[in-house]
Length: 425
Image (tube, rainbow, N blue to C red; front, top):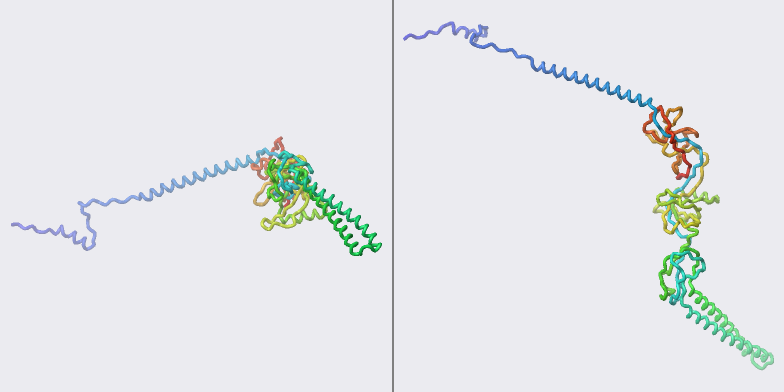
C-alpha cells in the first residue's frame, strides 16, 4: 500500500497565520462588502424637509401678519358710523326708593251695639257711602217700648215728687207754728230729695233707652267704600258677635306704608324737622309707570331690627281711586333737587379696567375719556368730572371704536332726554 505523505506547502500558511503573521488570502473565500452610510443620508433628507417647512410657515405667518396689519390700518382709517348725545347741564332730583303697600287711611268694622233681628239692609255692596248714611235697620219695637216705659216711670216719679214738695211746704208752716216736731219736717225734706234723685235716674233711663233705639239704625261713621255684607235680612245679631256685618274703607285720601333703609332715615328726619313738605310718587309693580303723587305724612317711631328698615307713611288724595287697599306699589321719596349738574344719557357710560369712561367726538374723531360718576335716574347719569356741557359723546356704535377712530354721525342722533330723578347714593 502506498501511504499519502503530508505536504508541507499546505500546513505552512496555517502556521504563519497562527503566529499572527499576514498571509495570502485564500482564493476560495469571497471578499467582505463595505457598509454604505444610509442613516446619515436619511437624516440629511429629513433635516432639509424640516427646514423647508419652517421657512414656509415663517413666510405664511409674515404674510398673514401683514394682512392683519393692513386690515387694521384700513379699519383705523375707515369712518365708523355712530350716534351721539349732547352733554347738557340740568337739574337732577334725588329720590329715596322703597317698597310700599296701600293702606286705607281709616277702616271701620261695622258691628251692632244692640241685639235683634235685621229688618232692612240699605246699602249696595261695593258702593260709596257717606258719613251718617243708613246701612242696616234692626227691629226697633223692643227698644221703642223701653223708651215708652222709661217715660212712664218718669211721669209717675214726677207726680210723687210734686206731692212730696206740697207736703214739705205744709210741714214747714206747721213746724213754724210748733204743731209738728223738727224731725218730721226734716224727714219730709229728705223724701223730696229722694224723689228728685229718682227723677234724674228716670231721665237717664230715658236717654239710655233712646240711645239703644237709635242703635237699631246702623249708620256709616265715615265716608268710604263699603265691602261685601256678611249678614242678611232676618238674621238675629248680637252685640257680642265677633264677626262684623260689613267693612268700610276710606279711599279719599288713602295712605301708603313703605320702607327705606335705616341709614337713610336721618336725611328724611332732617328735612321734616326743617318743615319741608316731601313729595312721594307711587309707581306700579314694575316700577315703570307713575300712578299718582302724594306727600310724606310721618315716620314710624322705631326701626325694624330684622330688616334694618324704617317705615314711612305717605298720604295720597286718590281722587280718581287709582290706588286700592292692599295694592303693592314702588315709592320714590323726593329728597332734594340738585341744580345745574352735568347730565348724559345712561347708555353713554362705558366701563373698563380703569373705571368709567365715555367716547368723546370732536372734529370727526372719537377719543376715550375717563369720567367720575354721580347719581343716575330715569335714563340719565350725573357726571361730576370729566365732561363739560355741550360736548358730544357716543351713545351707539362704541363697540367698533378705537382711540382716534374717524367717525360719521348718523342723522338719528339720540336725544339726551329729561332728567326724571335718581336713587340716593
